[in-house]
Length: 148
Image 1: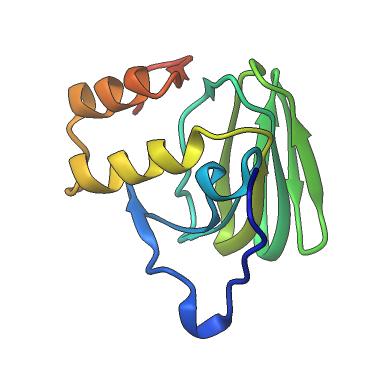
Image 2: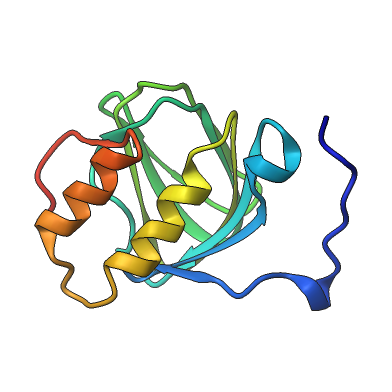
């Protein structure tokens, strides 16, 4: 059974660099026993290509604008905007019109490990695409279209 835990501002972990996006793991599945929570941010245009994974995901925009596409439908969300993306749904997002910052929540463990491996194995820009695809495959993330 998972134990209660607190994350004070002074103990927030350092952000991970995931291909130019800053990802702070607030709660990994190993600690919660189920869901994961992240703060994500990045400059305009930063975000993943269309992809799928076996966990539900939700985004709540804190600052800036985030363009989210899910199953071919795109919408730009501003502060206070929210989207739920079910597991297996092809989706992508990117900061629009400047930097964006958002809270993301996943329904089960997986994303924290994926982000950690991306931070460790894909350290340069532009990223080495074969390495990106290898890390994605190891973590049950399927890229739906080749990255640009």
